[in-house]
Image (tube, rainbow, N blue to C red; front, side, top):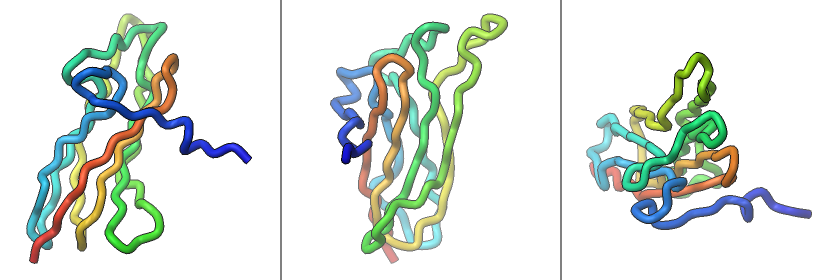
Amino acid sequence: MKSIGSLYQSGDWKGEKHVPVIHAPEKVKLGDLVDVKVMVGEEIAHPNTFEHYISWIKVYYQPEGHKFPIEIGSFNFTAHGESELYTEPNVSLRFKPSKCGTIYATSYCNIHGLWENSVELKVEE
């Protein structure tokens, strides 16, 4: 059986325009909201044209000790040149974690496929 996990690509977002870049604090206090910003193409802009675009970004949080991540945001970019309107893959969300864990971001480019990135989050009491 094939695994979709092996299709995800990653890399250094400063040298690769397809990697989702995650901006989030390294640590927060228990009970605080976490502001997360995810974008594709921070250092090297992604073209976002009719022919070459980011279709979606998904953001997950996997608390320590949990078997599976929890989807905390799903964003679709559906205007790819319609009436000369182009979207930029740049999203923000907030969530309140109850324990330390990992923030994951995934994205899909219509030409270059699936991409992923992650950052650790420490929750202090």
